[in-house]
Image 1 (cartoon, helix red, strand yellow):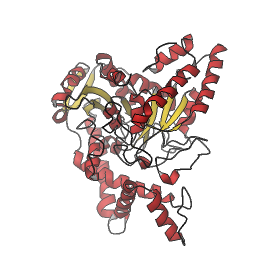
Image 2 (tube, rainbow, N blue to C red):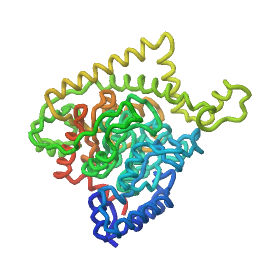
Image 3 (cartoon, helix red, strand yellow):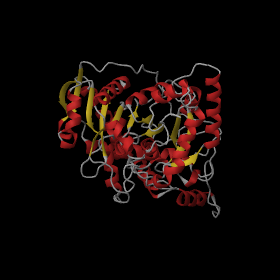
Image 4 (cartoon, one colour):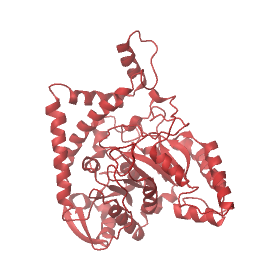
Length: 475
């Protein structure tokens, strides 16, 4: 049997087609790896062993029959527990959904099923995707595979940790304010937030509907392109979706906007040299980060307040049985089954939407969001992509950020892309000498220019080796 560690999609496809490995063997490799290493990492919530091996057997039968195979056929992957999976428990890492077995799957899961990809596990996250460290899960804390004393980031921390630990070839995540890109940076992998609406949100547990994006976490931009091609496109079940874009674009003659005050950090000097070799550099300034962060949390909390209203013990989820009337059912159920960060965001959003405060907070924040979107459009009139660090610092130690505001600040460089609805990717771009942890580089483009983001990321990874460093952390 071939060496199966840290395969790319193309490598796994070739190994399957050539008969170097069977799909059952490939799938079993990842299941065994999870059983061996996940006790120390805590990435997996639900293992799909039986269904995965059944699907793998069908792929092997297809190969033996000499039928054509798609690129994702037989490729094992994991998915954040925000994605509905028919017949497989979906919790959003919350006790209020502890016993929820969806009767149908999310559109993206259906698309990957149609492409022949094999779901092997549902992975951990912050509860309802509220957090930046995966410490807010109601079930377990996920640890960073590079150093288990550190967080993997969040809210898609289980997805990033699973890809870094080689628990699957790729993972699906959600990104509302950086929840794909920040954990990708912390775990030394590649994470793509597509243009808003490019990938259907149907069948994905809602957090903030005008921000939520679905995207892949992979070990390379090349793999991210392949997964995006499979999951993107208009969906009649999601009215915000847009037509697919062709994700093959040249990175030649690029005008690259570099945020000088951020990229002058010596930790990114080698990455900046690689970027300079890809095109003409222009110095640019991003919309004010502190302002963007404040606007983001007002708007997102407001949408959370609306979306999570359905979890009341009557319509959805677990119920507190000691209540004697309807109002008690609501309050006692939410107090028992929703975690403190979820409750905090619901209360913040309800306050921002309340009479007397709507104009001062929500309405004003919406106006600033429009200005931020316009500011991005002006920047992209003079450059093709913007390059920044993904985060100001590498991953932090588990338990070291007890102040919610300090936790929110870890999103300061990522939320603007969600406010403007533009595509952005995080790719590995160095190692922090002090901690030995990976650093991420963020590449942002104008709405609909996902192909440009991916082309630049692929070109960068052809001239650098940082995206391969993850292969050294767990043997």
